[in-house]
Image (cartoon, rainbow, N blue to C red; front, side, top):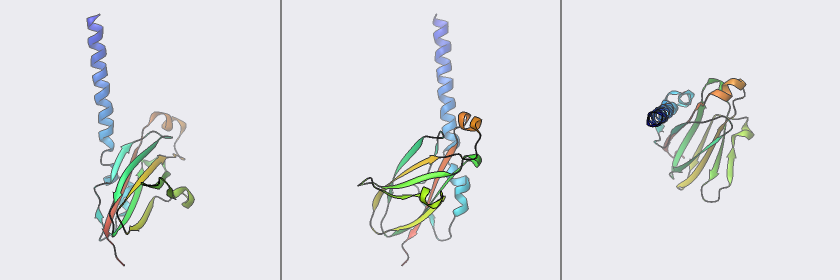
Amino acid sequence: MIHHKKILLSLFFLLSFSLLGLGQFCADFHKAGDCRKDLIPNFRYYNQSRSDLIKVGFTVKYDVVFYGEQEYMVSFCTMKNFYPVHFKLIDGMTEEVFYDNKEDDYLESIGFAVEKTRRILVEIEILAHQASDKEIEEYYPCIGMFIQFREYQE
C-alpha cells in the first residue's frame, strides 16, 4: 500500500514538472515566432509582450497598461497550422470592446497611438482553421503577443 502511494506521488510530481516544462517552451514564443516579422525600425520592445500555451477554443486575457504619448504596434502569432488568431481590445475601465480583428478578416497586427495612459484588456483565442481534428485534440499551441512602442510622432 505504501509502495503504491510512493508510485502515485512520483507520477504526480513527474506529470507536474512535465506540464511546467511545456509552459516554458512557450515562454519566449513572441520573441521568436511569426510575431517578429512585424519589427519596425525606431520602435522598441515593450516588456508587457507575452506568450502562453493555449488550447484551441479557449481564451486567454491579458491586462496591459499602455502609456500615454506613445505609439504601439501589437502583433499576434501562433504555430503554423493554428492560424488565424482572433483578438479583441477591450477598455479596461468600461469593459467595452473597441476593436475586434474579426471585422478585419483576422488581421494579425494593429498599430495605434495612446494620448493618455490606459488599461487595455487583450482577449485572444486561436481558431485553427487549417489544423486537423487530431492536431486540435492533441496539441496545445503557443500564442504570442509582441508589443513595440515609440514616443508619439505627430
